[in-house]
Image (cartoon, rainbow, N blue to C red; front, side):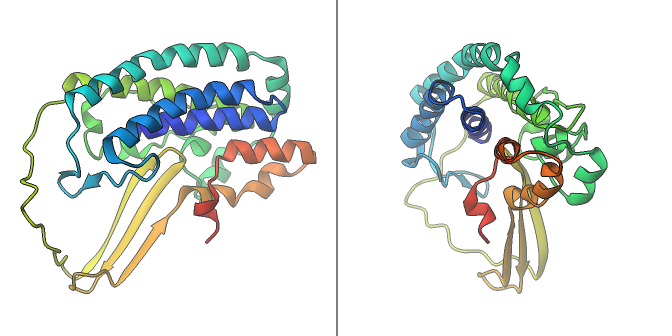
Length: 268
């Protein structure tokens, strides 16, 4: 689900970004066509299209049927057709290049010092991906590369999303080939709340927009004493002013679109 989420996030971002440039309708509909296929998958598995609430400590909330896996694999196997079509339309387009190259540039030093993460950071040439750094979950089993940009501009940020979708397809295809059946917990068994020891912990994942972290402080009771979410959008948006200096108001819309924010994370 993590890589499927990355696919639908990046696809919709490219569609919205092109809309910000004035390409109304067609590119966004192309992107949303693929996004809807993935959201339908989520809904059929978990009952929810966006907030799947699927992961659990030690496993998953629901079992994925063979039919669901076959349907998911079919969608993933056909996804490169969309990528090839979309890239042919936009990546060499003169208008896209003119609106994005050398626009909203970020240096690698600024990226590191400001704490931005995800495609925003990698577009500056900084080789940092939590899937590789921490190797959490099953990511150590999969072979994939980390796309990097050279100029840290809006075009590189657009390219990062396109290239990362290719890598997500590769990861998913490897996962489908390696997936094995596992034990299923009796639904009648009641799992009671547990008491984590006194202390603190921080966990993080490579979300589509960047580092999504969770800080937990425990006093030994079943309820956390303090809980804090580190959202990628809020952090990535903090350097918007630096990216916009020297550009026109029209450029600001495109630069902001390349940051890929969701207001639920930003409005804190």
